[in-house]
Length: 239
Image (cartoon, rainbow, N blue to C red; front, side, top):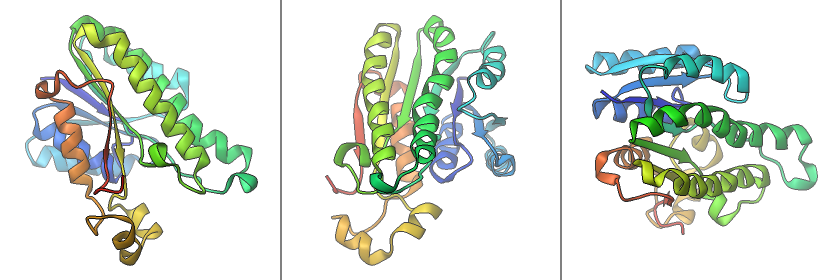
């Protein structure tokens, strides 16, 4: 049984990814930072469906704290599927953006990617099989007013994805990014009404978390062995 870690696994897209990977037969570590109760709920759902899951709590921006949790875990059993899903929004136009807003968004997405991925790499490389999927955003491809920090952070993730893919391709490890457009989550319901979505999305609807999870599930499977270094957008035709 392969072990998978989904950061931000207690959120809308993250929970759907956890359920999909568990349904595919993986033991899934459902990560949360502050909301342990939400992670426990996802774990309970997976177990009721006959899957294998455990909650995992740490702050992705805490380099030492992440290492203290992950390094002992992979001493005997590598994590071979990693979904870097943790991320935050803190929107403002750049002239009015505070340094705290900039740093927080970049810290979670970019430094969080490094802090989680780096300790897992050598065990994954030694196993000669792995799948890394990084959650990006359509904002990294098109830009979005009021999200200079978020677009910059996700653009960095796209570049890191392509570079890491080249480093580990010969070891049976693929690295890809998934860039969702408007996906139906609690956050998107607050930001967009149905009329906005109908104007912005050619398919006239938001995507679902399960549709994103299905794409990530495929990229995490043996069937996607020749797909690496790609940024794949799932956006209903917005671009």
